[in-house]
Image (cartoon, rainbow, N blue to C red; front, side, top):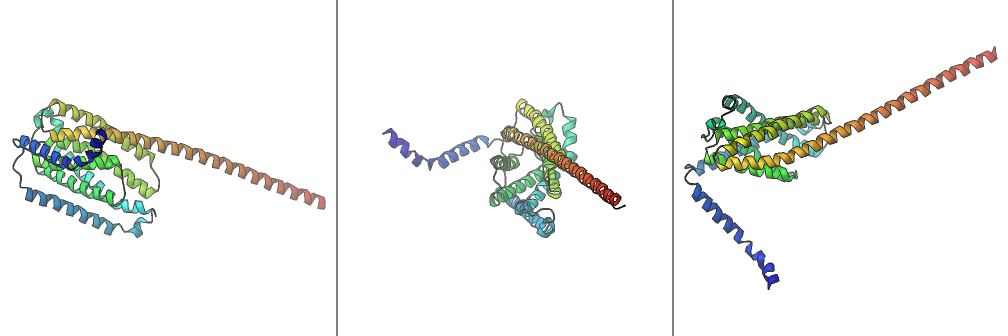
Amino acid sequence: MTSVLHHNKRYLLPLIPLASYTYGSTAYESAKDYIPEVDYYKFSIGLALVLGIYHAYYRLSKFCFKPTFLMKFTENPALLKEYHARVLAITTCTLVTLIACCYHVPNIAQHFNDLEAIFNLRLAGWDKFIMYCLFGYLVHDLVWCMTHEWHDVLNYVHHAVSIWFCVATLIVNNAAFESAIGLTLAESSNVFLHLRWFIKFFRGRNSVFFDCLFAFVFFVTRIIGGTWITYWLIKVDGPMTVRVMCYLLDVLNVGFFFQIVGMIRRQLKKRKQQALIDAKAEEKSEEKLEEDLKEKVKAVENEAGDQKKEN
């Protein structure tokens, strides 16, 4: 009887969507008090429009940077395809970082020790612009990763959580600076991540300096800065969307940081091995030069000896 029940558990699977819907409906009913009225038709058009703009920009990148130009630096087809996705990535994170530095950072610096004063505020124009930009980029990049077999579990989780966060924040619309701080900390480190990739692409090899620079910036912004904003989100009450996002990204950032540390170790190990190989090659070349010089000296001495005999 137990085995039959265990076997028939699979018939309960269709109930999962129903249970999820029931839970979602209950959560929505309880959240009606703080969720503003939203025109979902216009909202959906806005999301679709920004996604279309990103795809057009992706096509423009492919038009500007043709394979004939990129193949001067590498013939790896995977890297050639990834180049255009990286153009979108570095454009987005640079844009978000610049907007944050000009618009958000002055207010954040003014209330550095009292962030509660700027929490739980509605999104302004620039806040919404950043959210729409990130949504368009993340959805486009998620589809690109799936279609180009660029599979990474942490990357997929990060994109899924971030897309949900953008949509939820735009709908709930009461966490302007909480969102801005977290996004600025994340996207500012991404600038160095993609810069590192482009340097590697054009040089044909890694730059230990830029690898270490990215690791340092990642640690300062996402680990130290992430801990700082997490402290304030725990201390001050507010919308759960930004808090769930923050706590999940804290876990992901720890995973990413371990990956980065492993990358740095591998690069330093490769550099050390290459230095040993170069040193051995230099020793061999010096030994060969010495042998060639000895042979030349010996040949000259033999020639001089032959001339004496003739005389």
